[in-house]
Image (cartoon, rainbow, N blue to C red):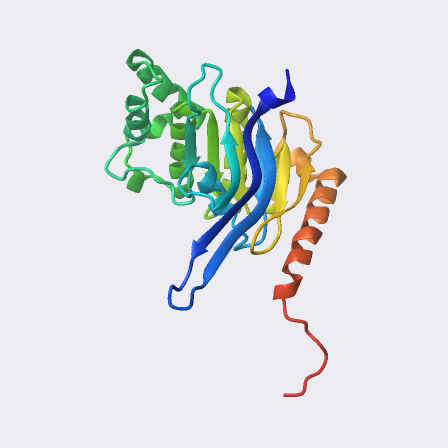
Length: 274
């Protein structure tokens, strides 16, 4: 396949500036001079220090923010239609007045690409994929935070997006739940082969999930490096963690992030004078 046909998202010299205090004529640059691409079916992680503009980049791809400069191109579908983009937020944006099944069904019923006769099977299939068969008729207040995030993941994949954008979806979960959902996400992604752009500040999470990692500089963010993660798929995350290669990736990227943050970390000396 021609390489250009493989590219689903292309970002060239992209920048975003927010207006600041009008009286002082100040502005805030969220990110600048971004250059990267995402291939069809690729799992790309965007990683960087807090405040570097990761989420704003994701919102720009989702057309929730308008870039101030540069070019953002999203390839159409093979049928020539505009690519469908789904998004999973940190806050687990599911409707509290709907059950698990109703939350998934609602999006499918409002998606013109999905035939009504297929909705029941799609709802059941994706509830099963995330292991919530026993909780299909529960309301969000009756299930745990990890289960709510499972609903968000199931709903997003069931809605059949061409591109799935994920903004630190596991950030508020405990370690074990987070690990389980990482495995779950990879299993569903492996089956669907959707294009995923996943924002995180967790280096180990990025190494375990991604085909490539776009490492951003400190604010204002730009691309410091793009690292290819050379682990075969499907991946067994517990086995990955035990390898020296995993440790090397984490170490290299950790040093990159520390170097970016060095200007913000005060130097500690032995001078105890007050």
